[in-house]
Amino acid sequence: MTATSSAVEAVYRIESARIIAGTARIVRDVGIAEEIAQDALVAALEQWPEDGVPDRPGAWLMATAKHRAIDLVRRRETYARKLAEAGRALEDVPPPEPADPDGIDDDLLRLIFTSCHPVLSTEARVALTLRLLGGLGTDEIARAFLVRESTVAQRIVRAKRTLGRTGVPFEVPSGPERPARLGSVLDVIYLIFNEGYAATAGDDLLRPALCEDALRLARLLAGLMDREPEVHGLAALLELQASRTRARTGTDGTPLLLAEQNRARWDHLLIRRGFAALERAHALGGAPGPYTLQAAIAACHARAARWSDTDWPVIAALYGRLVAVAPSPVVELNRAVAVSMAHGPGAGLALTDALLDDPALAGYHLLPSVRGDLLERLGRGEEARAAFVRASELTRNARERELLLARAEGVSR
Amino acid sequence: MPRYLTMVRIDEKNAPAEGPSEALMERMGALIEEMTKAGVLLDTAGLTPTSEGTRVTWSNGEFTVTDGPFTETKEVIGGYALIQAKDKAEILEWTKRFLAVHEPYWTITSEIREIAEG
Image (tube, rainbow over all chains, first blue to last red; front, side, top):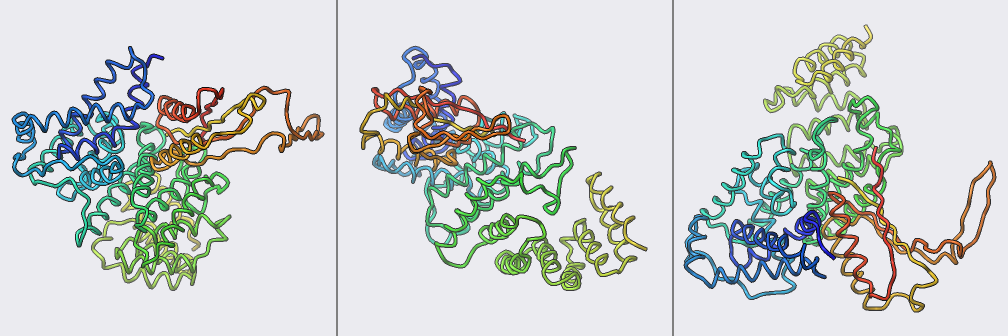
């Protein structure tokens, strides 16, 4: 059975992360590892159309890549030159570890932590992660993030050089730096998801697909780090947020708020998966981290058959815990909304009053927008109108501005 | 990113009488684990035989209920998987891997249907 090049490439996309990871364990440099992995792809493209796809294509690619990697390491001079190009000296690179057939999971984890290393800029971490772990091509990453392909290519090249130059070891961090390093990985995945979530109708389809790319990465990480609650918390959060995708836009393409969404269009398979991941996070014990808490909030919404069934006191309490572990004025504002739903607009307004002087929210249209709503519910019409108008001045979104002005209009005099 | 439902179709009369071998179940388990960890497999299950199944048909405003086995159809659905894959090429590759865990004496088809979104 012969193979088309698209079939070969599909195999490569499925296997590439593992091949790069396994090769990186030998050559100790992700840039060189990726080159070798791509050499293996070229070999497959040359041989498989003639000989047919091998019974275990992943193993074929891995063996091919590992042979080349071992060959390279044995030819010290060539290896030293390649490392020098990557900004490293042969003496500084630890020798390859003995082969471990069950170690591929460890190697994948090493690859994830390396591509999300904080020495890299956020854009670099995102590009490198999508490239090395997500199986996306440079052109696909560029289209998904609305930047030029050359920009992404440079980002990736520079990222690999930075990793080499700063001598970042190919390892999974342990010890005191581990929580922050894990946080960096989770943040990168969440960032990718949010970029996809922000896509609007008419965007290149690769943009909303970033949500699924992030979901697959989160699930991958959950499989590799089964005992880390926040990893399951992130996976839960993404499954639950993704569950609303089909309900988020109205028939005319306008975005719908949670209160307006047709919940019959929520994806219940993803909701179930989100609940399962959240339960795993809780079962592992310990104080819930920020992603687990956000997932718990999303789960509350998912459990409500209708907006009016929402358990606001629980959500308000969860926001209270979230603000304690991950303080942020935006989270505090969300807490104010939840508190207003649970305990009345007056209670919510008191919390927003405390945010008025926060410079971080100075240009944030949602603060006056929320205040407008609370003031209207309290019968303070003049102030409500002023707040909605203020919010309309701060938003850069034309439709949002229209809606806010309409609300200002609609406040009873 | 598209989602696909894959339905495994098998001729119940020609399936191995003793069912799947232990080795097959092991290989299947390993593949399911691999696909789950890759974040690609959303759901999967085997179905009990059609001898235990029932069909309900609605036609002209009336119900007809028929108990299995359904011998007039050559192939019946033995199981399903829900898979999130980037494109057709990827779902084809995963499906081939699933079928390839079966020994050569099996004749088995997997029908791939993309789930209609929106």
